[in-house]
Length: 119
Image (cartoon, rainbow, N blue to C red; front, side, top):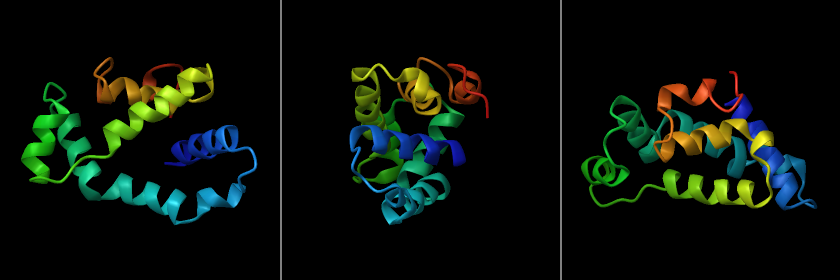
């Protein structure tokens, strides 16, 4: 979570240079990060995906959310588009590795050992 918050804060500063660093410490930053990491629909679905990465996000969503929609995978795709459009993969190893897992280029278990990221 610490590394995730650091990378989120850096991305905010790059995209919105006039933003206040304290923003990441508000409910839109750390509170959302804690909720996402420990509970909620995205957490439930990510846990199911980590157990069986062969399943599609759509199947997991349909089974576990009963009509609600996931936000994590689509948000991850958008974030990676921002990172790639600025040629910043080296600055965001965790976010890039998570994108790799979401798109099934790496296994969820490899997130912390891929792209030079070490926990």
